[in-house]
Image (cartoon, rainbow, N blue to C red; front, top):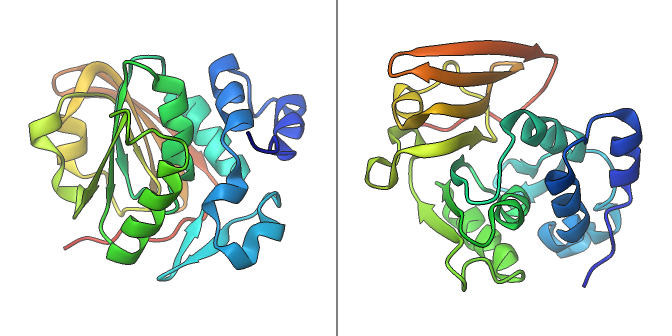
Length: 208
């Protein structure tokens, strides 16, 4: 359908991409389908690109790194915070298909429409795999919880308690906090194993 993202082979060689299902999704979901028309020529650069409203489509390497930490699987139920362009949403949807679900939240109305339009190019909303929701994701998604995985694309000062509460035991959360990416694994109802990966830059998480 689309040109394979040329950065994928480099990520495989460098060891950033390792998991077959994630690699396949990166190859099938063309980043050029998720950037503004005037930036299509830059879609395959390993850098964030502006998508309007002060937001960006994330750097491909960062998305690859975070998804390898998240380890989404076929059938996973995922809460995605800040879907923006919809590129990561579509990658996740490809991985969890056909039985999984992505609950993708975006609070900026212009980006909500932009991202939905982009994800629709791949049919993931039509077949019910992706559910898009407009609003403040810091409040959680209680009526759709619990989730196998939770992932955020914007940096918080701390992880909202609702995200941790709505994660299944054994589930994984990947989210930026300040300038680090954190991996949380829920070991029981009130405990988590945590690991920090510093040295990243994200747009800030917007709260009500």
